[in-house]
Length: 262
Image (tube, rainbow, N blue to C red; front, side, top):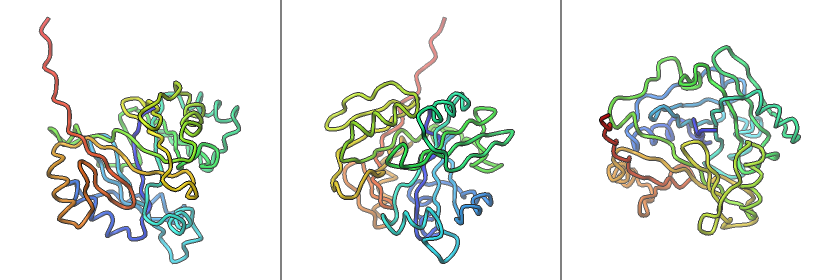
């Protein structure tokens, strides 16, 4: 299980996607025509070999879409996590055995996907996808490429969720996703996700329910990102910036290790 794509829900798609592009210095996003079946429009940015997506309702009726209903309850916010798996057949069998409902399923020659019911995993909509070949990613568009140099090494490192019962939510994710038990991490719990993690922290407001609080990213130049965030009027605290209702924690890329001679 590896984080491959994070998704924000936003009321204003163009403004939100322009903001992401400016703050993170990303290129032109891909607009996937396939998401029209959900009543939404989107913008998908590549970052390394991973992706940041923003979705918005495409029509005037907010309550006509899951995205719109989410926006009515939470406003602009983190919405969804897409994980890459190496064995979706085994994952689907586990979901069925646990009684986890699938709200959408798609099987293409190059990728298969299962969107899990948020009430059955908690905190977010989670999709488990298996691309073929593994380095490909249909949802990023036909023309995406990993950028050269440090830009192509940037990555999505983690997701943070808040819950009135963070340990129970972390254990549920581990069970549903077939992962090792979470470990205590400060006041919360951490679940390993391939080369990333999911953190589960105590809720600031127990009445809000389980929700996505933010994401962690490793970027080539955190100070430049934070400076651009300030120039856009976004709140910045330490190495974190507030964007679309979520806290984005930035870390610097780790230096490449030199190859060891034989």
